[in-house]
Length: 127
Image (tube, rainbow, N blue to C red):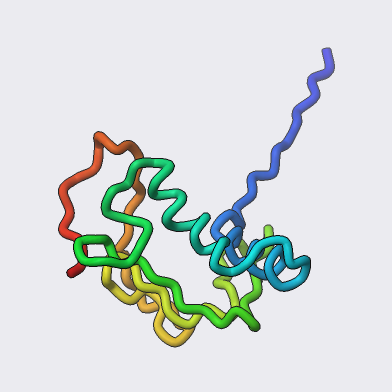
């Protein structure tokens, strides 16, 4: 009996998705505008998953902010090196803590996965 084993290559570059969307769909092909991309990856996600304290900047909301150069943003991750940071990312602030400062990773581990809405531990949003 011969068995066929199918190997599925998992997309380990999924953290580069937003960078790729910004580069290819906004700048190269002009399919979506930058404000629409930002809305669809922040406020729209929060509303879809009923995350009341996320998705926009405001008092009482968790402060997740990305500052990037829209002209130089580019995905550099590959299957061989999936953890390479994107080019053009200047600052990343997660829950009010700076994770990327001037394009360099600070070591901050401020975020966490939101697995189920019912499993969310009480947190205090940034003021």
